[in-house]
Length: 332
Ligand SMILES: Cc1cc2nc3c(=O)[nH]c(=O)nc-3n(C[C@H](O)[C@H](O)[C@H](O)COP(=O)(O)OP(=O)(O)OC[C@H]3O[C@@H](n4cnc5c(N)ncnc54)[C@H](O)[C@@H]3O)c2cc1C
Figure 1 (cartoon, rainbow, N blue to C red):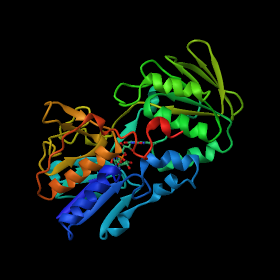
Figure 2: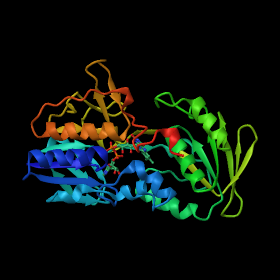
Figure 3: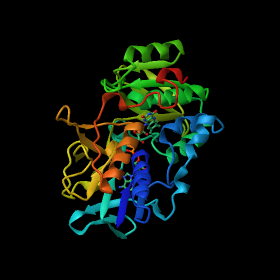
Figure 4: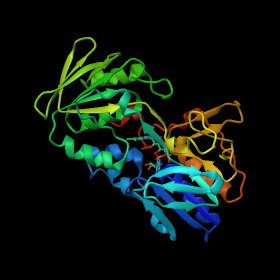
């Protein structure tokens, strides 16, 4: 029996352990376009603030080494899934044949909706992004965060704690989306004010000028200007499913799965942020972003791929804002 898992974040890793538990001798292949087999994505901020913080040390914490006989195909992307042939096609030209496939590909950002023309912009999604930002921020004084939601708040936290002059510019509808529970837009604004941070909402960047190859002058639609050394984006994110589009697997906002995380094709499952899960209580299929819900779904998918019938019931509070033991506004 050959199990193939696309993505080794929270969901992929949890599934890996469950499959190994139920089928110790099965062949297991994990494909990820990242260089690391696994790391704790929510701790990227701590890594950027200070590599020596105890939380940052946990970034690389991986008990994957307890598992043997897993073929990790790292730094390679899945191009296409061909269910009729039980095959996935990789960007290095190779193909993998599976008996069961789990898609645990998470989300992607849409930086193009925000990025002004002509200057370099960055995001924080992967460990490679964190390493790049770490290198860049050491030499800068002023950072402009453009976008909103949890990502923008996390970026403000990072740059503030690194002693940078941080400003937050949020286009209309971006500042604090309603889907983020437990913390209100007003509380976020009040906290930014108390910390003396510059936050301006309902403004769009209209142009960006590269002053000398190091500094930029950004102008918003109300005519205000911001000089900064670094522009970091906090765009919307969406399930990363482009490689599934021609597969015949049903897709809406995410990969559609039933409460057992099965797609319309019986040997293909999806779990985590890329999945749109049928909620047996409401009758609606929902996409849920969050580390713990992805881990839970990965575990259930791993169980069910090996012959069980576990059910996932999505809940609203699954975006775990106190994942690090501290609530969102207490991490500063
Ligand atoms: C900076 C940051 C801080 C966060 N903080 C929190 C927090 O405090 N609390 C919380 O609940 N959530 C937090 N999150 C969100 C959380 O990390 C995600 O919800 C979680 O990682 C989702 O897990 P996943 O397994 O579904 O996907 P991911 O962890 O995104 O893993 C998916 C993997 O699949 C790979 N992949 C995708 N497509 C392909 C392909 N075609 N071929 C090969 N590989 C592919 C990706 O590169 C990635 O490695 C944070 C996210 C970020 C970026």
